[in-house]
Image (cartoon, rainbow, N blue to C red; front, top):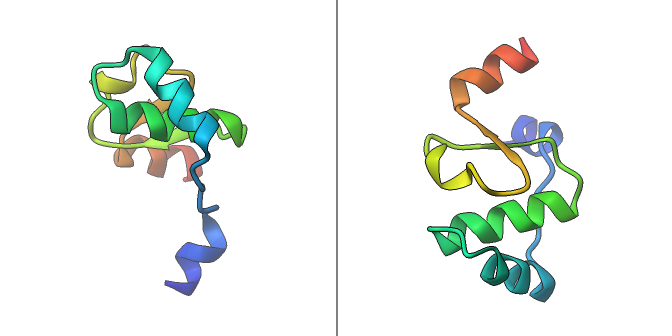
Amino acid sequence: MEDVLNMFEIADTTAMDIYSAHASKAPDFEDAVIAAAAARMGLTYVITRNLDDFKSLPVKAITPQEFLKVIG
């Protein structure tokens, strides 16, 4: 777990993220909240197996396999 905590930043969620997610009209509210928090933090990617729900959201979604290639 220590390695994971050193490698990744944990994103918090703010009220503004909730408002942004609601305004996005995304098909999945929880994914919209994740994308809003990631965008606010200036993150490059969201790692997920569910790429479809992130297509119209402000942060690029990549699969775990794509992520391994990026850091490779």
